[in-house]
Image (tube, rainbow, N blue to C red; front, side):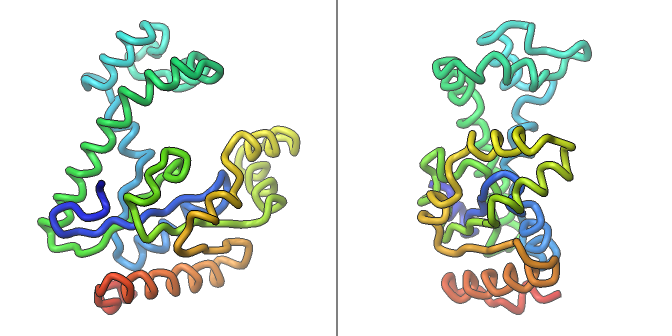
Length: 215
């Protein structure tokens, strides 16, 4: 649906929690590949004074607002966490707005002459959107590495880290949907080389000159 918008090809980047997706995205940016971050767009579409935020307040009440009038994400999460209908209602508000913003960003990149861009999103496979962003790159690492990263980042207990991992779709299912897999369990230098190798392969597959992304 969005993989080619006005001449720019969007390839997908996804992975599990603490799998190294942000590090891969940072490497792509360093190689001058534009990255559209779905999390960033999700924040934009519910910023103060947006129709997205107004729709959320109409659906869930003013209890999801913080004292400063911004969206209280923790309060909203508590509201929708265990309620499938509420979560679907939230998705019906945010997903179309994120899709429109994605198309707008893609059009801006195309107008700037960019032939290729990365769409970074944690739930591409879960949302059934993987085929819209081919080739799909999945970032992977062993579960024990995920646990170590979560604990170092959030000072979480091992049990809490494992619970967060289990709350997501198994990484093996995301890998099964992938065109390319980047294992980030190595050193930063190794991970950068692996990302570069995948970028080279994507450029060859799509007919884009890799020299455009030289350091």
